[in-house]
Length: 159
Image (cartoon, rainbow, N blue to C red; front, side, top):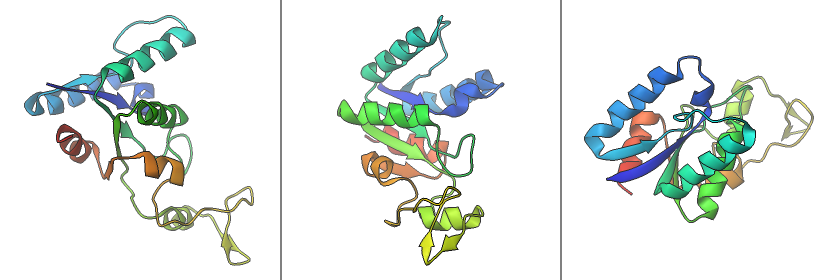
């Protein structure tokens, strides 16, 4: 049975218990044991941090929800950290992102404007253009990028 850690901002959803049940139901026919943050009652930030790292250490890989969180374009920073941690530990990382157009195209459609021929964010900083849907450091760390949870899970189950 394959063991996969599920990273993402889903843990902040008020109906996270429903989401966990959905993930478990999707995993069962694929012989995947999901490791889900928030399954144990833990006290304090340090305990949660250490527990989630231990879950990633137990997993064969990470499946990450990289959809925008608390903003227009960037994924949850905690999820990005978990992806980087797993990558540094030599584990595969499969992400999913509903809009997989390249970063400049995603930003343009979100109201970011081009000035002086350069694509700039709201703070006037340049936007990288490597034809990737995510920041280069995250995109290059991914073993695969799917469009949704079910597709990502099918890919991850094959690793």
